Amino acid sequence: MDNNQLGIQAMKQGELEQAARHFTEAIEEDPANPVFYVNFGNLLASVSEFEKAESFFNKAIELDPKSGTALYGKGNVYYEKEEYEKAAKAFTSAITEGVEEADAYFMTGMSLVQLNKERLGLPYFMRAVELNGQDADARFQYGLCLASQGELSQAANEFKTATELDPNHADAYYNLGVAFSFEEKAQQAYEMFAKAVRIQPDHVLALNGKKLMEEALK
Image (cartoon, rainbow, N blue to C red; front, side):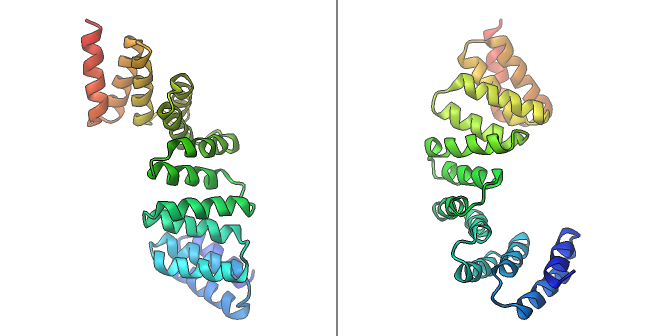
């Protein structure tokens, strides 16, 4: 294996210093290869060295302006730094350059949600779910976006699917309870709030919802 492959292997095994050495040697051997800078950037981002990571992603983009993986890496850095406008732009650029993966769409949606642009985030979560229907968090976030646009029935379906994929997803049960309460299905709402509380006893919103439904069912 070459130094880049050895670096990736070491990174997967949690041997980060060794990975850094291999990536450094790979760059020294071929300083014009953008992939090596992307991999080093990902390594730095994994240990929260975001400023350094960004500089490596920038170098990769300088060498290859169409490097989708570098743009995606920059998006993650911006998201961690809470620069959500820049994150959304970087993620969408990565998608444009061929990063057709569920995570890219999911993170674009998350960036837009952080900017209170749920309507714009909706199609990105929809695509994330299309690409990976087994991701409970993608289903959950898609449901939240649907609910924010008044699509409660569709939202409930996504929350239900999220609970099936992750039976310990307290927030999905809570939001499913909210959807049932809006449909005036008090018993079903109560059961969902109760499940959320069993999973997370300090879930204040679920506790309040459960209490309200108890009153409604008297």
